[in-house]
Image (cartoon, rainbow, N blue to C red):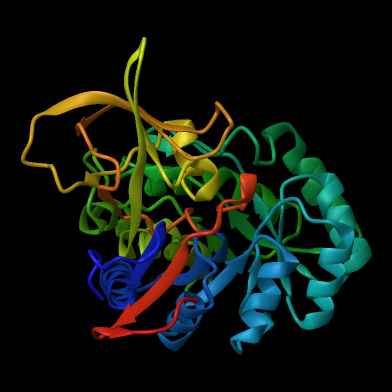
Length: 372
């Protein structure tokens, strides 16, 4: 598929072969860790089916994501329901469909699970150091230390199964030692769980494994150099039967895709040059609102760059995707490619203001399929 073809923009092109290479890379460096892909990163059915074909399992944030997995033939029994906050009816339906493992980070949540999935197994999410991540997650989620013993005791007294811990070092984490340090933070909590009568069956290290954008990142080899010794020590402490899993999302699919957009407007303002693309924060680039940056490829990259403000097509003034972005002075109609946009782009996209969702084209072995 030639990106310069006169296709309506915006559109996203995904190469499944790149996903395969990331699956292989993860397994090569962390062979003792089972992958549960974070469906929220990119729930495209072709992406999900490809991962299933390569024996990657899944974690979900909603009952709708579970339905998507069932449609591709995934057994719900091997799916982790990792959102710490779930509606009662979602717990009940997931349990009825075969999901057995649920995440919680509060006493109220384990009570909901007890009421709606009484034989369900629970993994408790704790907050760990998110330093070095582009998108910290420790403020919204994580059982605080002063509630750990009351929660473990409450569950033990009624026979509710708490089987392990989970954590997240933050999205796009740049510290290669972050995961091993998080395991160190988890050890006292695991000891407390056992003292309260629970058996440790599972450790879930979450996601946060980074992909290349504009800033330096550690390689998977560097992360593994810190993490593998910690995992080996963990197995010695907890026994060889403890399952160790992770939830890579962005890492597996982020660099599989390129987003094509066009410059549809240019204006000189008091603050400088503004460029307008036919995709913005509401069409799939929501992460730019938090300062997330992407590499842009333009037909004028050989020309001198200037600092521009780049906005999306909507009439909402919030829809500004880059400020002070060094880019050549584009012409209206220029095609712009946004690299490594396979994660948290089409998944975020909406039809706000009536603008269409980006078409998605799936490639594999140089074969083109219909838009998905």
